[in-house]
Image (cartoon, rainbow, N blue to C red):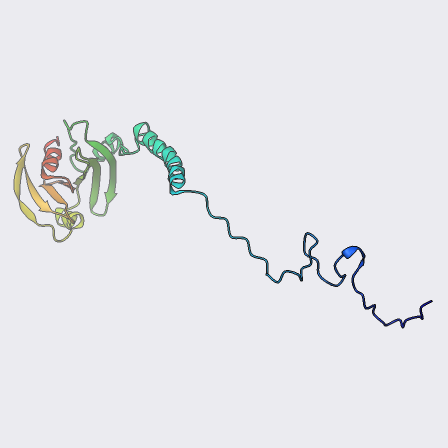
Length: 215
């Protein structure tokens, strides 16, 4: 019988039975000792994107095709590029009923002229009838008939720099050609009870066509 050993004595042989690693040595996954391999574990390389430029181009095309179809439908069937037209008749009738000045309206303009606004209103010093048009060339022109005195109306509508450029005859009436704001020009008809102004960024031929159609 072996003599009893002190309780604080550690056995010299730390090898467990059956060839297993020591109990105080960390064990790596798979049953191997972590202390046997000094090489630190390698980080997994981030996965590279498998989408090629061709794939991205196809994805973009898939997104753009529905948008193009919607735009085509909007323009072709809903008239997306066409100006919103209005009927000027109520404003003209209101001006005539007020009987403040004689009211003229265009006659004989082609169907490619579009009326986009029309309004009659009383203002300080008189009343105005404004009718806006979109010309066949896609320009904006305004027809203004007013009882406001010309010395007040012209500076307000054509700016203080607006100066007459000379007379021109249209449909038996003598109009004055004026320079206006920016690249605009105007035709002005001065009468005792009203002033008529045709102004816009349209060409001279379209301004003359509108002014000459007034009856």
